[in-house]
Length: 113
Image (cartoon, rainbow, N blue to C red; front, side, top):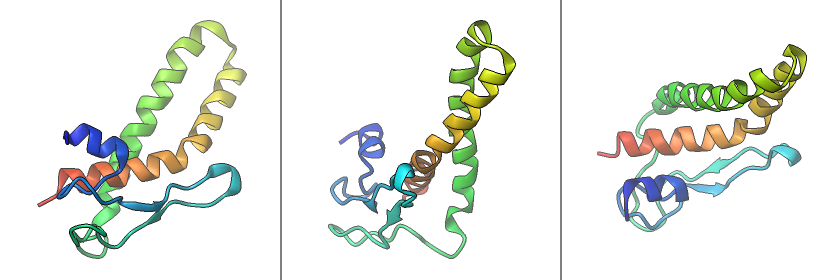
């Protein structure tokens, strides 16, 4: 399985079989994503040490900036500042759990060994 496909599906970087998250989260029910401690298939530990996922904050920031640019550029030509601001804030809130999940998945895949 390719690395990109493994990241999109949220699979273990070592065996590409086990899921990284038990629960993907739901922003509308205010339920945060729940991550497994290790891969159920191969036993690969996802969190290597305390504070391991602090670096995933930078990945999350990059994802949020890319999303905001993708919204801002077309909205700049179509809407007023107030509407653009509301769109950006709404997108940040709606994509927060998705960014959390994918930032950790990408971070795990970057430092898989």
